[in-house]
Amino acid sequence: MNWGILIPIAAVTVGPICWAFTTWVRARHGYPLENRKGGMAAGTGAAEIERQNQLLIAENDQLHGKMARLEERLSVLERIATDPAERTAREIDALR
Image 1 (tube, one colour):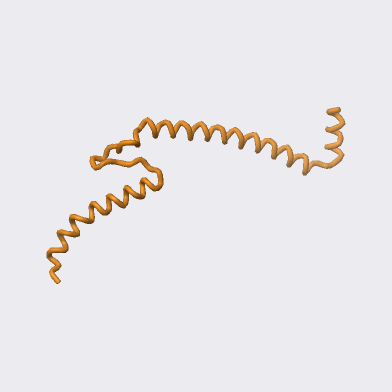
Image 2 (cartoon, one colour):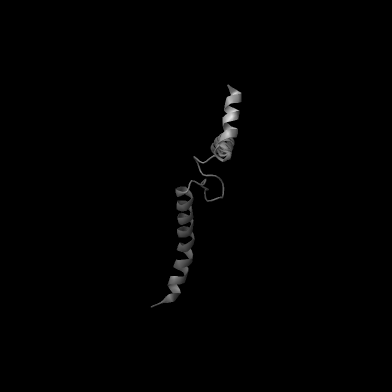
């Protein structure tokens, strides 16, 4: 077998195969795609990425607020569960 011809063929084909594979992985996982010159491909503009980023920031803030409220409620429930029964009864009577 003549290995001399396989080396240039492998050198020419390995690059495009690797590029196609990385593009497939990026598309599958939602990363922005790049064109051959390193810029953003059509349909994956910076404005769309910025909009998605702002939506994620807003959702993150909302979830942090919910988490803080749940932690506060959990601390009240823990205090009620661990306090003696007579102290809890006094506090309930004081509220009436």
